[in-house]
Length: 130
Length: 500
Image (tube, rainbow over all chains, first blue to last red; front, top):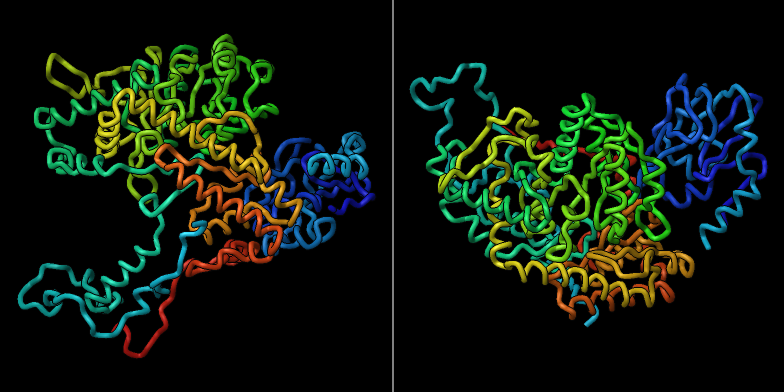
């Protein structure tokens, strides 16, 4: 069973988002990394890049596939996890911690508030595996 | 009977450079230019200081090296090749006979028209055969392969919109069951891809196209049958919706082998489509030869076709380039002519009834596998399919944590090349199987037996499957490490005498 921590929000595209004030940290979920298999490359957004909710801002690649990363919220990328360039395996080893992908600064948090909570996301992945 | 794989006299073959022994030769070389008497007329700066580091081996060593490598190859002439969506079809040997006829094989591409009337007549006739098979009025044989055909076809649509509307529009609809080259084609032409999600039935729904279609959209690229092996049953309705807003309909006809003699995209509202001669008309594929991706269109796109056009004037064939609306050339000379000869031969060999039977057998074989394999595997859309069927690892994953990759590797130990895996990407952990029309019921039954054996092994010894294959010279490769830490070139071990 996939790990779904209760301290953050989720999207149907299997990303997590965690607010620290106006800054939303973003990564992919345990369910996503498990299905992708070994992550071999993460194409990160640029710092300063303006991203829109539900639009792609990067990709994550495994031997099986290249998958788009969709931004959970609209805002400006203010930090990216450069460590993934050399060590993409962090996404597999610690997707909710050291495997984070980027941080997006938002103007208002209403989009964030509208994302799924842990219970809703758990129900989603249970239905997908049914 | 279940396995035909054995490990007889197979050799681990090193690189030929590693077989090298200083001074050993396979043939007598002429004297070096640097020591030849007289002026060899090469400027000083162009002469080598040192001999190149070629492998130094005897003739039998060279012969054995390459023969052994060729024995490690696996192809359609070795055994069953169930690669879906990338049709690996048997290439009849008569195609090769005909392509090797002097009049075809030794043609010079710059030979004048009057010398190549026979070749031009074949070219002209093949265009007409393809037009009749697909239901269109004009064809270009120039594009070098399928994706090049897509590019050419969409370039025609772009040129048409430029000409009739003054601008090419900006976006194109592409269902998520299309071939991956479709969005790439659009990017090259400056179009933005709008992805359409396919329905629960695995096909495009008219209401989704209606909702997405507007005057900024140049049209839709539909793969039909799509990459789930399903016929896009709403294609006519979709075409009407797109046409109503001034858009055009492109059909990726890579999977035309399923429709041969039964249905024609040109009758379904499609404006342009390409064919892959290697998929539908049995020309070699991949390393076996260059591709060919003819594009078929209706009259309204015909003025834009690439030049030169081959035209018939009485009993004479001429190359005509005076076409003011043409998009220009897309390939040197007439395209990959050797492939046209092979496809022409295939069509003439099978004839009208034979082509229809080939299409029917391809569909029957895929459905036979679908029904059989559904006993032990999850079939994504368990209803009549076209030329290919898509399974997943759902049942094995749940029961024994066995994934698509393990099933594919397990097939190698049972004497079969794996099918396409992890594609189409709209299906989680897909296994896509396309038997093609040439496989006998006995071969298909052995394949089913191998798949059942894998399912059985997943229950009793999953670890063996997770580490498969065990029989080939090279076992399971570490794909992750290969991508994360690739070794991109071989370096010689320096020895004091090497290269002297």
